[in-house]
Image 1 (cartoon, helix red, strand yellow):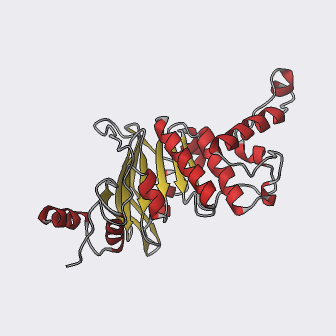
Image 2 (tube, one colour):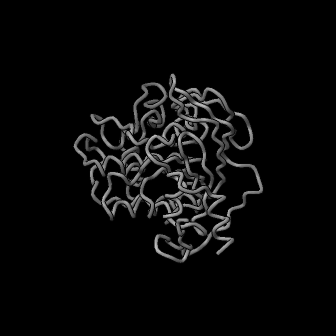
Image 3 (cartoon, rainbow, N blue to C red):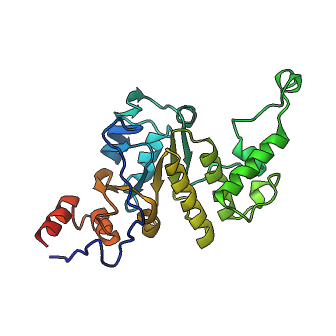
Length: 285
């Protein structure tokens, strides 16, 4: 039998302040029995998920496990073939990402979804442009470009990004990490219920990654619900309150990072052990 490490052994990042999340109430976002197929390829095969206010729920899984498909079904980029979505206990049906955004769900997809030719401020306020006050805005529909740039600068500074100075700079002139920072800043600025981050630190350096993780913790502490999709296990174990494991299009269970190690997470991801088997090994130890 493969020996499994305990939470105090290598591979575990102990949380400095273990948090107790109230999960007795209604989840902010809930999915039941989500199914999504692409011809003969099964993307999701009956996946359940619960997300509560004030928590970070990480989603992990190997390539092809269905992580991105799950997130796209939760945020309107894809419409599930079967299953149900609930927001604050009420059934919802997102036909497009704009529907989810209007419901308070902001998403940073792995492809970032920024427009390179536009400047930073315009990208942050895309589809949320602010008009000038008075007749200039109501009659002539003029935009408050100065105000949007000020607010964009505040959003970027709160994220802790120091390498972006000019909000009028075109996104196409930014590095990959800077573009990621712009997309994360947009989600952090406008997410009112749920913020979904798909590999937010993948293109970032050590310092910028730490800043993004800090932003995730601030969003959670402000009462928002955060979904984090990541291959970076140390990052997941650092900020997640619970970890949803995807395997072969199905939900393989939910891990508690205070009780389970990173190596144990990998064993569940790869199918080497189930969460129940981990519990059994620990009970026999």
